[in-house]
Amino acid sequence: MASSDTTAPPHATVSMEVPLKTSAAPPPEYGSGGRSFKKHAVVDMLLRVLLFATAVTGIIVMVTSKETKQIPVAPGIVISRDAKFSDSPAYVYFVAALSVAALYSIITGAISVLALMKPGGNSAKLKFHFVLLDSLLLGIVAAATGASGGVGYIGLKGNSHSRWNKICYRYETYCLHFGASILLSLISSITLLLLVWLSVYVLSKKIARP
Image (cartoon, rainbow, N blue to C red; front, side, top):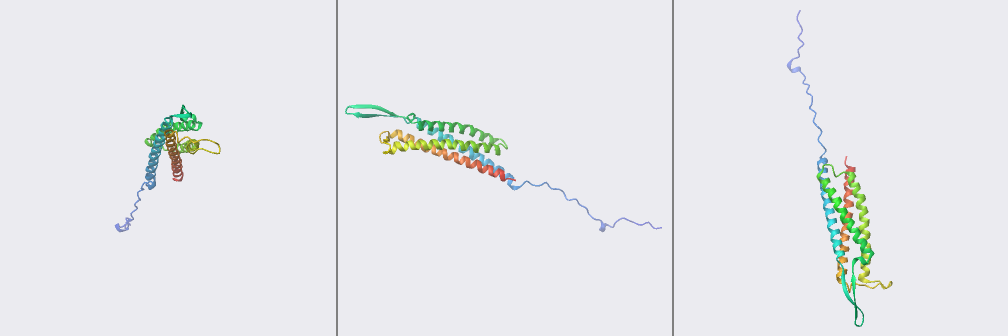
């Protein structure tokens, strides 16, 4: 009895190759997103350095604005009168607000540097805190800038309805000092506004990121 050969011919063998599993590549936006957040951290740190520089310079210019003039009050009678920032409550508040801004910029600038050096340090929680604190300080500095600007305008132009006389024609150096200081405070306010916008933008990118 002939035995049946069940061996399949060479041409009949079926090749059962199992495809190799390839690891899923990370989405292309992952790496670029990390670099983007790092750039935002660098911009945040630079803006805080600018905030510190403008706030400190504004304080120095304001507190050194004292000027003394000899004012004639009667024929042959001259009195010495000083003009200094402490004479106006608005300017005292102005110096206090910029002092807080300078100290705040040092603290948050150091935090930004640590976040830049530490992986994952630029978290959404940190940015949320920055948004709250930057917005609060923006209101303080902007209010101080507006109050000082109003007092400075009266010193420059006076107010005939309230019978407030202008003084800048006499105390020119004093007026130049507080004018430059108010301009620096305005730059500080704009810097804080940019910091708020930057933090909100980074938060929106983190929320939209899959």
